[in-house]
Image (cartoon, rainbow, N blue to C red; front, side, top):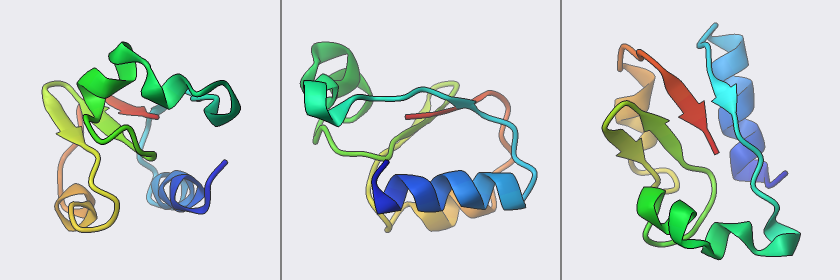
Amino acid sequence: MSQPSRAVLIFCKVNGIEFDEIRVEISKRQQLSPEFAAINPFKKLPAIVDGRFKLFERFRGWRSFCGRELRSLRLF
């Protein structure tokens, strides 16, 4: 697991945010798949999906994530 992904995982756990963790095998280049590109066109990890909301920018977008009420969080 990458350090940025680990940081997001720890943040969610510490703050009691429920999420579904979906592992992406970098060694198998799964982040380059068309399915993942639909989530993050830059094909980088981590990425978050909450309904129609997608957050994939490394650190700039995380501030909006911190104050957001989440419905169904999926962490990639």
